[in-house]
Image (tube, rainbow, N blue to C red; front, side):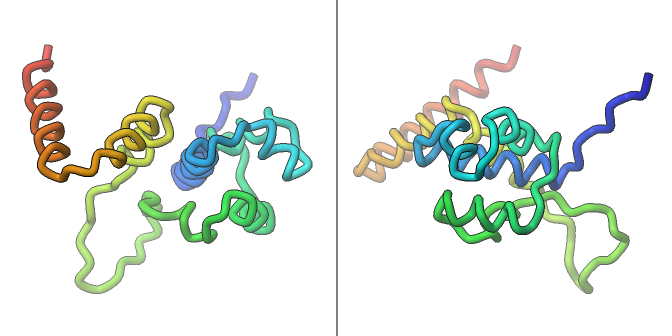
Length: 138
């Protein structure tokens, strides 16, 4: 019996960005699948990074989800190619942000937070959450 190969980190990232954008639009996996001529199970595999999304398929998805193709690569992990731009240092990965936004709680919290018009109140909420997080280290 062969062991399953772990999904490529870039494929996982692109899939999580597809999921995040789909959820932002309130679109089901089934509806996205129907628009692509696929089953919702195939969309699930794309979103988990289990199956790679080809270039033409990614272009279709970007059109349906109304974002540029580059959206799916924002914050993508760099793959060890050994090639590095001169003077560039390793930046911390913002993957935790897209992972958070890809959850229903993360998306709901972000949408609600952005509806708060008072910037001072938003700052106080951030301070409160930071305090709760500090005190919750068990």
